[in-house]
Image (cartoon, rainbow, N blue to C red; front, side, top):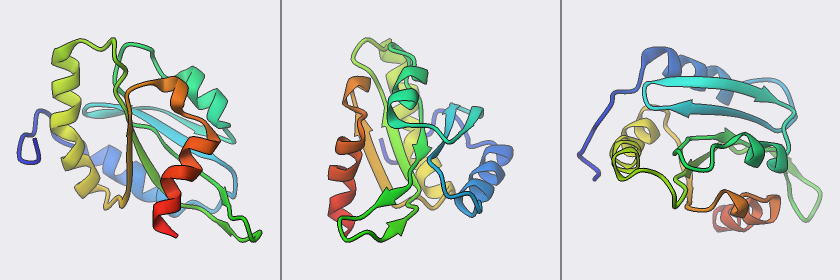
Length: 134
């Protein structure tokens, strides 16, 4: 699937991601996107609120996070979370999975995670995923 590209990354989404990466705000934020376009930008959003925004049966690519380390340091990793719930139509799963790598490369994302269950999207889950990068 690394060479399969079902849909291209729109230039406006690339620009939106670049601005998002270098934003000055210090709160949690997310961009929910579908293939070929972004849907909505959220600022000051909790993981619980993000979970509630994700459709139960359609894949999405959300991005987010203000990370407070155990020693009190704060960092702002740009996380790419590929949400592909179990109830998705196979065509949608293939379309998103086939385009995921292109989006990751286009946006120069390094913290890439995947979940098949939106209920897994908790702050604890994300911290466990980010622990690899310490």
